Length: 319
Image (tube, rainbow, N blue to C red; front, side, top):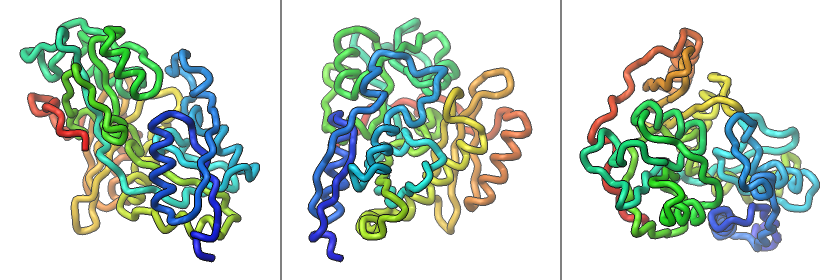
């Protein structure tokens, strides 16, 4: 069946970023689409801290329920919000081409310190870094800074930083770029993803369908990006091997480096709770075997890049 003859109902959250993602999928599908906004637990419990609780599925569960109940045909999510294990009867039909996966540091001008080590923020500043991953990375690179919960959508968190709720903020670059959000008067810096490692699947938009819906699956698979799928699937397998995703911090970023090989950067707490980083290279299976040995062997410090002046650079244009 021609996709243009079928009306596809796309389920999504109602934030500006989620709607951008849903519209992007709609445009790429080449089908008549209707966007259906669904409130999730993450939208309802806006002010509750997420640390120490299972956040996987926090922003996706209700959308998946609507998909199972056939109230929508496609569920569009940020992949990093999805649990590694798929619910019965649902499949990830498409992982769209990934955007820049890195994080950005936004700094109020009155908290900027170009002489500070690694990150140009004054000593003791409050930094919006609500996830356990960002909190752990901050503790490794700048233990004097104070990670602080700042919840809300992308514009809300940026505005809270402008207003002085925190003196700096760490946020995904993809969110700012997709919304074409100018963070002025905040100063913006790109964080090196080999040192400040992203969350598994960060900057990847996923499209989920019912396993038995062959017609919709065929349409949605047309926008799948093979290299993105390969890399983020390794990231998610690393997350599963590490036993993370619910109550522990974990970071992973995988990129293709040619000849069928990948480079994987992983961040995780060691046995004593200290944040450690390690890089692996080889084909996918070799990377996963080496990572498993590292996880099981105590997660000692490895050959990850050392944080230095190049870790934090002036941000590139958002377009």
